[in-house]
Image (tube, rainbow, N blue to C red; front, side, top):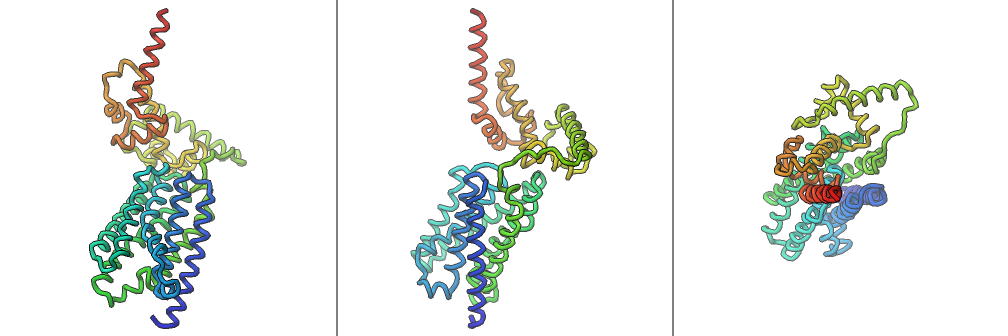
Length: 357
């Protein structure tokens, strides 16, 4: 690397480290749930370690300290955790933090034996799979996302970030096969790789600063509009929505916000805004599942339905699989469906016995 390119490399990494530091502070001090703030702060810290430890010049200056190198290894895992926490709208479970531990373990194997091809391949393969799943998470919830700021983040930044991580893995394998290839300059250790990562971080930080209360804050129902015409239009739409949902539109399997808007004869963007701003929901699935969970609870608490399995009741309510149903039910009640049913039926039985005396 020529002297001018080395100066350029140091400059872009300095900018990247500065932007990542600011981003980490913003994420850590936000109003998001704890797992989002922790994952975001750790992701930024690991990104900084990655930017520094991959630079040949900086490695020669700081002597490539092992703790710094190890801190860079879980960056893909922290990014995956952060993305899931932001877009799935629920706290991360302990098991969902495990990819970061696996990546650290594989990284320590690589540090212990730099020529360990098996460890290097395992690490990069795991990172690549996490990046692919991150892209899947971004795409899966796009249509049902009711937050316009977060919808922009999906496409413009986080999708780009996941694609960048995936490309870095692919380029890493290519560089391993052909060390003299031009693609080495586009790895994170090359000047252009550092530049691209810095651009991604700066773009995300700039967009997040504009939308962070909406994207990462606690959802709050909007106050009445100052424009009486808008307020009247929203009330009419809300009445139409309540009427359609009272006719159990929510039972339709695979119901989308586009299909619901079509049945109401209203533009999709107006329905998105109403459900988010007026009803306080961050995603469409959460809104629909509220109706489904209430229907399930009514049947679980009915002694006449005691012979029906929980799975049958869940499918009848419109849930397509049991895992999302159990998560939604626990989020709404703090209990599993089976435990909730047992408690309700026992309380009803006790009430009936008491009424006989």
